[in-house]
Length: 371
Ligand code: PHE
Image (cartoon, rainbow, N blue to C red; front, side, top):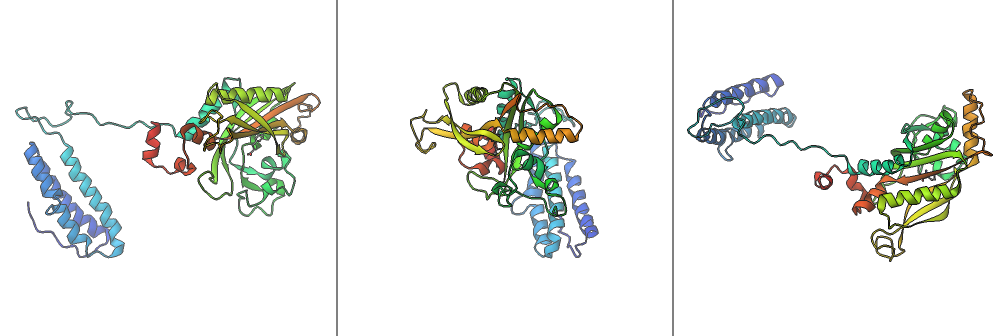
């Protein structure tokens, strides 16, 4: 079996194929007698031995002097060859004294397949969505590439509002020739789906909108240019701020435990009036004050407010263009509330994660902790 290593003279694909085919032939010649574990071990040493194994010798003879551009095609073929040798070694060896049976040995342990799990972010997103499904909300989705109209204009962002600035918004290139309302961008929040839903359907509306959003932010421990939100929208007759408070208080208790308290602070969003930021009592210290809540006892978690009548006005205008002249969103009769929360932030609090980048790293040591 110990033939000399043939010399490689040329490195074109055909020559490489020929050279490797010859070695593969040699491997196959050796596999017919692998019926005892001793024979297998000898075969393994012959081919895969660390110092004098044939594969090692071949690799030295062929790779060392190979030109740089031949490294990759050589490497690919080496790996295939190695796999073939390893596969031959996987073939079952009959137990001593038993008849040698080629084929499947049902006494060997099976191949263990690792079942996949949902990504922790999707898990948290589903958990939030589920809380609202139990309150009678359904899920709506919208596109990640949005128009300026749905992302900003219909949501009452004034023409020169800083959030439209290229600082925050990832614009799609070459949109300058279009009217500003049709220009494409990566949606900066899930709120445009509020508009899409209301234009398409009359109240009552109770929807949650989970999804991916993009902002031109530098990545750091708490920011990522791509992240996820869950939005909520409830529109009907007689919807009040009390309904908003009760709904979110319930949702936070369902997510973080019944002992959690909520409080609402005045805030501003162009598409809600009044607007509020919602804080929950710190789940780490129970409100006493700790490092996680910056010693305030509270953690800020989401934005919300009553749907601004200006939003209903844009919706009505769009519905009229579609021939839906039905007064469905008359602000004298119809009110609503909306809220939006960051999924990463909630998942980080739930799991005690301090670096947002872990969610996107694909590091199995991180992900396996959620299996
Ligand atoms: N869209 C807002 C944001 O991304 C959050 C929000 C949603 C606020 C709904 C109020 C109502 O910051």
